[in-house]
Image (cartoon, rainbow, N blue to C red; front, side, top):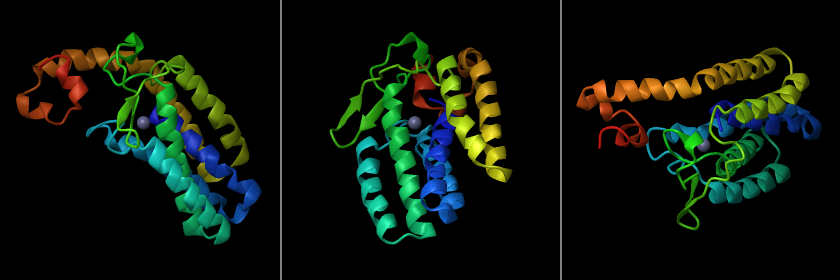
Length: 204
Ligand SMILES: [Zn+2]
């Protein structure tokens, strides 16, 4: 799934605070956005393994939700929602496509790494690849209530995430063809800055 889909899921998760503890809703929504996007910061270093922890984020989130319930405050709520959103992201990556340059081919058996069991979880492919039409549809479904529940800057961020998702979905496959053309033409030192799966398919 696109990082924007995960971010929108996190924002919607944070929006639950509107009904539980509205005074913490702004921090919860921002924490949801940050936690939803955070795991994909490992894009260039062990993607879907280094910062993806489907089991450990979930366990930590349970503890953090307990702490937030007992001692509600901006920090405890923020940490709890951040961990919940990161857990949701990591777990839901298993429902998407595999870790490969062209996930729509369905050749990879690696969706996300489960550090607890020490093995890769296989992709379910409910969303075949990031930027797929069903991924964009999911982003819209998550964005609609988030946009309706908020106004001001949060609503603007939701709309911006939808626009970015739409543009990405439009160019997603073309990006791979650009990569295929570009990578063999890059000087060797530049290859060090690309994710392994981009390089290994063409060069190594
Ligand atoms: Zn991810």
